[in-house]
Length: 121
Image: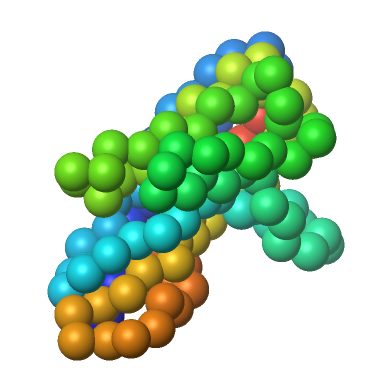
């Protein structure tokens, strides 16, 4: 199986920055995609950003130009640099990856437990 552990959440003032990290571990044979989702109270979980194994990225319109996703493939780690944070960015941020474990033929979606981002003055 694959475990995802997020870190870097916290309280930040509007306009501030945070950097989230997510490390994947376990019997990983291959990861073809890693990304971040978020869920605010009373709202559905939504895609924030995703990066593929060839470095292609995709962002939610609401974060384009402010957030940057990157990946350290050697460490199976994904980062989310969040700048110019707004109160509406406050949510629990979840790491996600599509990974294939050793001896498996299939890629499966895995989720972290989430890290809370609060944007408030």
